Image (cartoon, rainbow, N blue to C red; front, side, top):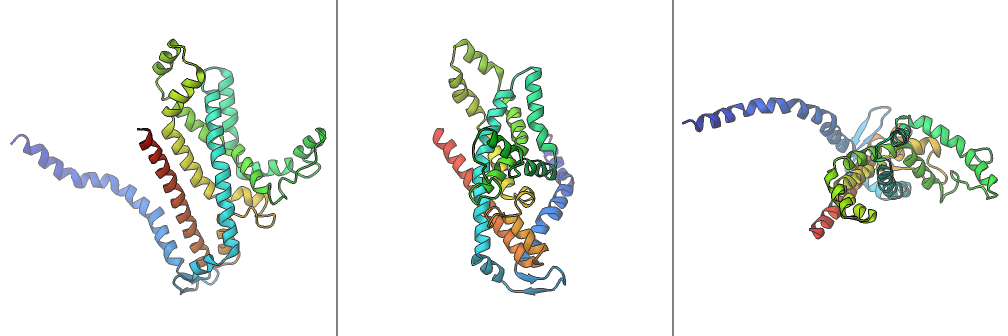
Length: 299
């Protein structure tokens, strides 16, 4: 009888537990599930944003996207941007975290310096870099001229513009993944490093056999976060190149923005956003599957 009473009390309290979760579920449904369902519904309509007229057209928006060469180009631009920026984010932020993960005022100053740029607005960052990248009079052009090298059309070249925007993006927000790696580094027990020092283990073996294996989850987390963030790239491209030159830097989010607020075709823009969501889910799922497969093989 003494064992049944706690069980009955636990079952009776389950509705009370649900009340604690209810506010989160309500906010989650209102801010995520309802807009997602509404967006899927609108994507099956020819919805004019100005007149708010909506006509059911089924899969016509998706069929039009399938044959839209401009949309194909912006999807490829976005995928290229992710493939360029994400590895740089992971490798460079990890390298910086390893370099500044030590006591002392200099390391503290460097951590603050690298993180400082990420708190500035995208408008300020793009303005500074557009001035630096100005032809002939910009800081980069003058640097090349001082070295006797020809000037590179970094923002006006079909081959260099997307890479330039990606590098500016890395410079802008490299501090955030660096802080994540620093937090993960500080969770590694110091006893492991002390034991390695007593055995006179070389630094490269400490890095490859202790540090990097301990950071495996942090590396996966940073990579996933950056994949999701870079698929949604928009403001720095809009402000630096406006999608040019020759549509080589226009992203999917910029395409959605133009279709919704310039062409006033909300249904078509919403269909494009659903395609972007599907691409992001495929990319994240593939990366998770590859990391799980690697982990299983190592075990």
